[in-house]
Amino acid sequence: MRNYDLDRRLEQLYALKAYAQVERKPVSTKNCDRILRTQNRRVHELMKAAYEIPFYRARFEQTGTTPDDYHCAEDLYKFPLLTKDQLRDWMDEEAEKYPEKYKNWHVSPTSGSTGRPLRVLISPMENGWVIANWLRTMGYGGFNPFTGKTMSRPNSLHGPVSEHDSPIQKMGILRRKYMSDTIKERVDTQTLVDEINIYEPDYLYNHKNLLMRIAKYVKENDIYLWKPSFYTPFGEMVDDASRKLLTEVFGPGLIDAYGMAETGSCVVRVPGKKYYQVNSDLFVVNVYNQDLTGPALKGMAVITPLYKTELPLINYTSYDQLDSYMRRGLRFARGLQGRMNDVIHHKDGSVTEWGNISGIVNYIEDIISYRIVQEDYENLTMMMVRNPDTPVEKQDEVVKALDEKLVAMFKDPSFKIKYEWYDEIPADPNGKLRVIVSKVEPGAIGEPVHAGEDTSNTEITEK
Image 1 (cartoon, rainbow, N blue to C red):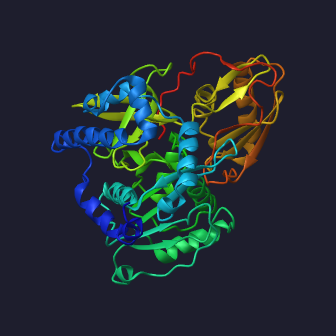
Image 2: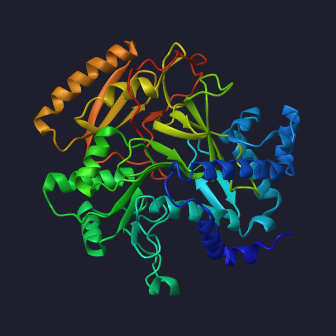
Image 3: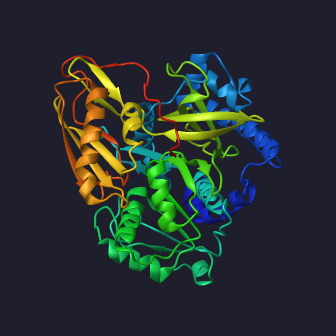
């Protein structure tokens, strides 16, 4: 068996080696052919590794294919999709069956909207690629991750952490500082502003809801805030209203990085660009049609990290929607929409999808963040954060206009909608912000069925 204890000790070296191999410049005509060749090679290498794993061998047999049938991103459409429930069951089985093998692996937990957390096992060598991928993503705009200073919130599942500089950091390399705010122990916004101003980070990355809280506070109180050269909000999509406020307060260096806790950042928009690139040397991001039967340009994003060869994630379903296009064999995107499987349930068994709601709220510039909570089949709560540019006196007018549009869209007379304004919408336990939270159990009155395609005419501009 591989010596994972030694691998864990060598993990930083693995990260540096991986960083030397990844494409560190954004995709261009100069490097796109090389990226495509690297992606094709890694697709085949991944499938050869997966063929030796019983979980995936069964999937090869199910499709009647072998690794020789997989040499490019498009070939992965032949392979079955991997759902979160399937991944959860497999990872739990592996962890329980081979505890000694995985004791030196990383476990990337997600909170699990069903109440059952998902534990993704990541080997030390795989984690080296995760680190390298993030370092190069940070550097897309020109930030040097080895000499610049970064600032972030600690892992959202932790409380305050004790900080100490490694020998490398004492030499001025890979310097970083944690903010004092955590999910378990919140601090006031002025304290966070003071921490940023004192440390003066070159790169700031944090949950979007926390950055939005800081931005709103700074603008409303007209106070000074250090502007980092670059920053990344994560945990939820960046829409036009929040993008406008973030760039006004934090500056133009917004690096918009999309990914999942299970996969890492794989779709990135760098400052000054209106499109997103896929980090195609380390990922395949395919797009499936509404029925999940085949390829499309606009549909659900399905992610395959090509570096994860020891316990692979092949064709992992995101339930996020990607509006994409292809150039010279590589995928790019105009935008993303998040969590298309979050829905509002109706008594008759039908549902209203996320896109129908976002098609209304995203066009109201007076609202910069929102969440809708369904308590039961009759009671909904719309939680909203006011745009600092909108006077408080206008809130009632905003609510009236929004209510008229939502009532017309829902077409459900049993719905009673309560509207509440917040300085910051409370995040989920994992630090993210689900836009729709339905406490209704599907099928409680009738088996829910989709009411049809997303009928909103919104142009996707979100992260």
